[in-house]
Structures are given as structure tokens and as C-alpha cells.
Length: 361
Image 1 (cartoon, rainbow, N blue to C red):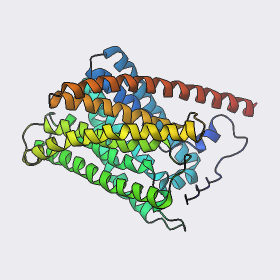
Image 2: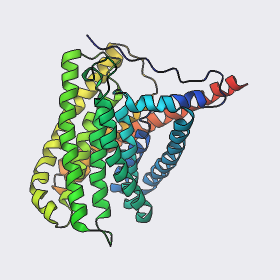
Image 3: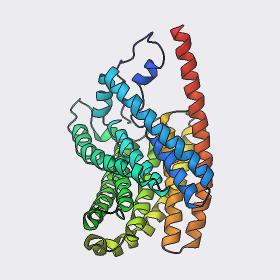
Image 4: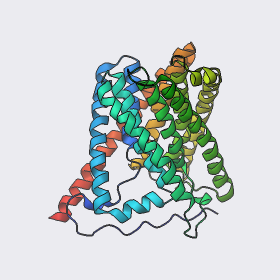
């Protein structure tokens, strides 16, 4: 029997003007917008489509700034709602999108040559990863509200592993900079990559146990389950970047191991895709769950874009033309998915604004 979904707290203020009611329920995982836009921009950059890549970089940067303003505003005005999300097993791990979004944006800025802008973001991502990596899981695992935690695991838990891998990629970006300890950065890159792989394995077991023991309804199979594929794809990207790093004691000790695993991880990503598509068909076409815009849809954009970039990187590093060709095809799909979700988001925001204006009037 599937566990019932917990009721949301009544934090809204009826009759409040402007966007306040929507702000009260702002998704804690909305930084997936930055993740998805940033990684598609990176993919376009890697295949030489500079103009479109730059447009997406600007959108990702503006989204990052706007989201921080909204998150801070929500923390001040709707503190109870924010704390509820931070402590809830269903939503707490979505906040790791802040870490991953910061890391993806930093890497994309560095690829554009904007290293002075990227470096503070890398350091910020590292601090967020360290703080969130201990505080959020502790709060979730110590939750004692009468409901079993295992029954409340979901696809957002994989974002913890994504955040760790994004930091690993960040380390490969800052390593060539003067004044940076090469040995320390190599150690941190391997550390965060290894932690990300270990977290993925642990979370995968928990999610699988939840599905086997409690089952899962079409309504509960939400877009963040795609992160199960995206978390493995970003491990491929991080692994290929680490393999290409210059010699340090830690890099040399793990280079062969990492190089031998990334192809296996990529193959697992490829195997997961038909399963996830089939689950979407079951959810929307067979069981008739309505398909409408939710912020969680960005959790599909990011994995598809990350798989494309992973395929491009792996194909080039290991000289696998077929894998690189798959990456080009996946990137085309990622651009289409991004455009559809971005358009749906704009339409949704317009409708929210219209409703808010009418309520204020």
C-alpha cells in the first residue's frame, strides 16, 4: 500500500497582493532551472553553437540571481514554510539543487573564459555542499513525526549525489589557476566524485526498497525520478574531467579506476532511459495523470542535458565515435525539452501574475 502524501502547511495568506501566495509555496528545487539551462548551454558550447549557448548562459545567470532573491524573500516572509521544506523527507533534498545549480553555472562561466566570475561561485558551492551535506540529511534522518522515512524517499534524494559530482567538476575548473594547491584540489576532486558515487549507491537502494515495500502510484512517480539517470550521467562527466587532470598523488592513484568506471556508468544511464520513458507513458497515457507545468519538470531537462554532455565527453576522451554521436542526438532532444519546459514555465508565470493582479484588484 502506498503511503499517503503529507498535507502541506497552511502558510499562505489569503488576499495578499502580488505574487505572495505563490511565493509561500515556492518549490525548494527550483534551482533545477539553473541546472537544466546551464547544462544545455554547456552542451551547445561544446559542439560550437556559440550564440545559442550564450543566450542560455544569460538566462541561467539571470535565473540564478532572481531565484536567490525569491528564496531569501520567502525565508523572511514565510519562514515556517521554508523550515517545513528543510525538515521534510519529501522536499529537503531538493535544496541540493542550490549547490548543483551554483556549480553548473560556475563551470559554464569558466568555459566562457569568465574565470573571475566563476571562482567565487565555486567556493560558494563548496561551502554549501559541506553545510547542506551534513545538516539536511541529519534533519531528515532524525525526523520523528510518526511516518516511516523509508516510505517518503523519492527521486529528489538523488540530487544529493548530483551536488557532490558538481563540486568534483568545479575542482577541475579551478585547478589550473595560480596560487591554488594542485594536490589539494586533486584530492577534493576525487573525494567529491567518490562521495557522489557512494551516495548514489546508497540512495538507489533506499528508493528501490521504498518501491518494493510500499509500491508507487502514478501520481507519486514524479519527474525528479529522472535524476536517477542524471546523477549517474554527471558522475560520467566528473570522471572524464578528473581523468584529464594533471598528475597529483590522488589523481594518479585513482585515474585508472575512474577511467574504467565511467563507461560502465554511461551504459547504465543509457539503460535507464527507456525505463524512465516507459514510466512516463504509464503515468500520463495509461493512468491518465494530467501533464501540466510544475517546477519538477526541470528535473527532466537536467538529466537529458547531462546525458548529452556525458556522451560527448566520454566519446571524445575514450575515442568512441558512436557514443559521441549519441551525445549529439541527445543534445538535440535536450534543447527541445528545454524549450518546451521554458515556454510552459513562462505561460504558468503569466497566469499566476494575472490571477494575482485580479485578486489584488
